[in-house]
Image (cartoon, rainbow, N blue to C red; front, side):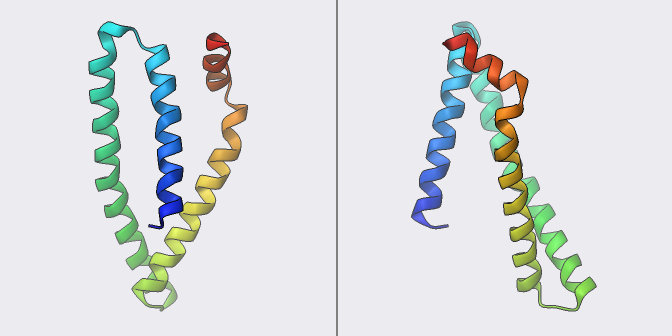
Length: 102
């Protein structure tokens, strides 16, 4: 992962941090951050497992190398993330959180 991609994750984590801290009562901060940490770590395990299996299946189905199958998985995942990021402004709950803090 390049350094510029790492910087993007820092920006995203900072936005998540702000939204969670400003919308969570002080007495629940520890529980909420414990749960957020658990979800983020278990997500890596699930994502790596699923993407590996998917890359193998794509490679077998198309008759290509596993590396090319992994490339296809990464391209599709990237496109899905772009679509997800473009949809965020239209999510009413996120807009409501931002308006509560204004």
